Length: 369
Image (cartoon, rainbow, N blue to C red; front, side, top):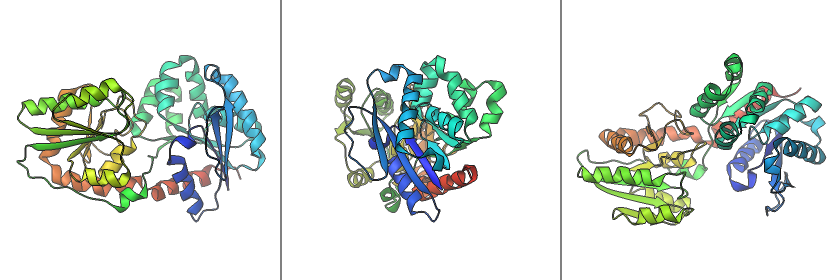
């Protein structure tokens, strides 16, 4: 079974490599072929089995349908579409539009994923393309969302009522997986119920989107209530202004990016993972922290929301409401030991072996015979 993977983000994350690795190692007869649509100035290391098409210039982004035609022509040149059983488009607008063209000309069915840029850029800001996004979903065999929260947001906000149930029937929620290292090194924490000391950690890019200052303000509110709070931010700095504002607080610590081995050691001395991002497709950092028994606080309506019932591994918050964030921190502490155990136990949901099997089943049901 030949599956054509279309993506434009392959070289910027390990997600696609992990999925393809598990697909190849499975007992199925899947033969994945990957086409990456890149910018002309991107310098990517060549990789066996991956067609890296350096196609786009700086103006292509402004002309969506021209870019789609250009992509379709390029894909036809590097792969034999007549032999493909199914196309897996990893982004709704950028790759799904190409998959739709392939289906029209070659009768190859496709599945499509909806990600952060689809929701928060294309659907939200590019109103003239909304109907086309819906059309891509209508023609897909399956629509993959990384979270139930994003699925509900797209269906209820952008899909016309008369088409909603038909499209919903094709939707499936499949999260991203995490590096097996985290799952092989699970840990849990215990705390004294009456302890006033709280260690809060964040790992990710320090920028406007990750919204670290809302976390810092929440910490200040807890300090005012008599708690001994320490906040640690780990990661690359994209906003020096935010970085300087964090460092200026006496209860904070900013650390450079760390390896997964170093992060695990750091997490052993932490209590809660707090990342109230403004936008988040999924948020691998939450799942990684869970493996170490750290309850998580995440943004309501964004990628990690509804992965688990509220209160199972943490709580959702309004990312701009530092009072609510502080309240949820205290709520976690009131049942911390049990929640820490549930975090480690439930982190198995993000095992790539489990996730790849879900994709294999979808491929098998929806392939062209």
